[in-house]
Image 1 (cartoon, rainbow, N blue to C red):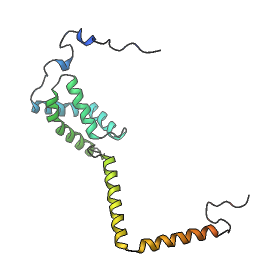
Image 2 (cartoon, one colour):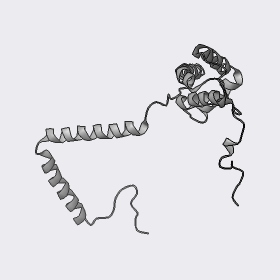
Image 3 (cartoon, rainbow, N blue to C red):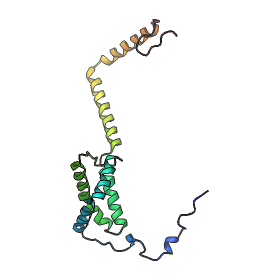
Image 4 (tube, rainbow, N blue to C red):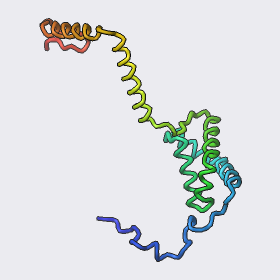
Amino acid sequence: MRNFSGPIPGQSLTTPPKGFPWERPPEIVDPEEAIQMHLARLSEPEMLEGILDLIELDNLDLKTITNGVMRGAVSQGMHSIDVALLVAPVVHEFIKQGAIAFGLNPEDGFDDKEEKAEYKKSRDTELAKKMIKGMGKAPQRAAKEVQTISAAEKVSTGKPKGLMSRGEV
């Protein structure tokens, strides 16, 4: 059965204006005051414990946590998005230093792991090409040797040897 508890299309146009905190003017407009407010909130034991749990247990990076803190403040009407963009680096560094003080090694979240892997793959490919060029005609000789070795293995009809070979059952 479908859940019909969602908003009706156009419902937001029928509610009184400024009914949500983000529709009203923000409480704090000065970035300095916003920094002080965030650092005071993040210094509270319950808040700090929750953030450290997110880093340690859920393996969240600092960028994700900082974005969550900023979005929460904007959605509660504490400050605007513009102030959040100015305050975010300070909050990020505060959380990072707090995590390090408690013996954690948090990830910043700015590195793109897929991009790094792609870069490493292309770098390794270029290094391999360079090595092959430096070998001269050796790759052709090596290819012939590999072909003769594989042909000799096919001809060999001895019993299988090795750790994983199965004997006769």
